[in-house]
Amino acid sequence: MSRVHNFSAGPAALPEEVLQQIRDDIPDWNHTGMSVMEVSHRSKGFVELAARAESNARDLLKIPDDYHVLFLQGGATLQFAMSVLNLSAADDTVDYVITGTWGKKAAKEAARFCNVNIAADAADSSYSNIPDETTWQKTANAAYLHYTPNETIGGVEFHFVPQTEDIPLVADMSSNILSRPIDVSQFGVIYAGAQKNMGPAGITLLIVRNDLVDRGRADTPTLLTYKAFAESASMINTPPTFAWYVTGLVFEYLQRQGGLAAMEEINERKSKKLYAAIDNSGFYSNPVSLDCRSRMNVPFTLGNAELDGKFLAEANDARLTNLKGHRSVGGMRASIYNATGEDAVDALILFMQDFEQRNG
Image 1 (tube, rainbow, N blue to C red):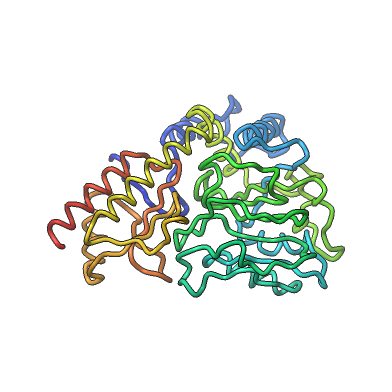
Image 2: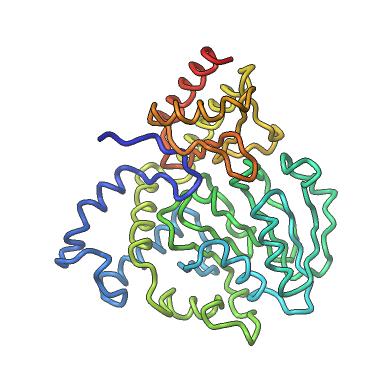
């Protein structure tokens, strides 16, 4: 059976080249006579795999030497707690910028452990824009400022990096990491769950500046400290070896495509043509302000919401899957991460145009 066009927000599509490599490796990885899921994480072969994955991540993202690159468990949601436990004291104030659901969840978790100042909140726009940075109410001595560069549910993406001077900037890049080049030196901490743009669910990439590794609270559980993972090369306990292996394959795949500059060009083309199809239609609409539309997650609504079910059923029959919008907002959402090719976007646009002609 041929593969579908998968627009899932996560777990999301993986490159076909990577899937084929996994298929070939499953019975006998690296000439061990075992799959990678069966080898010891302390074996020479897997330690080399882990080191190669870190090296390739550093190469792709141009990560400076004074940053640790760690591979953790618990997804980005665990990082909501780890950020505050590792970067602040109980009487500190931390700043949060909320532009959607995930920023809101991160701030709520942080409030369990210290004082949270909401520097900006786009709730008044139903999270369809990003408040002008000049209006943010930042704390002069905040322990850090946290933001979500791309909100998966609402389809809002920052196309600038907030300015924080000497205050560490913490970013949840789960849904747009590896989609374009970034200047890592502008951040104190970057974290990203793998299951959207980097690999399968089960592993989280953490990039943390060296001077921030040992700021954790004394009573923080060992497995929630940056320091423990930094000192153990991310192997303080048995890591998710299969997810680590697949993520490493994705890094290699992206290098073969020409790196993140090449991926940025492709992602710009994909998103521009999909937004153009929506904007030029009298049937579909996107609620997000033009200056902060996501290149990764494109929500849209139909002119008649009663047609939503029909649209999804016919799309599924056309092998265009996982287009249903998040339950909190409804409508449709096309997630077009790196592994979702231009052919998938073209097929979706043709289907949308045909559906409009028949139902508009």
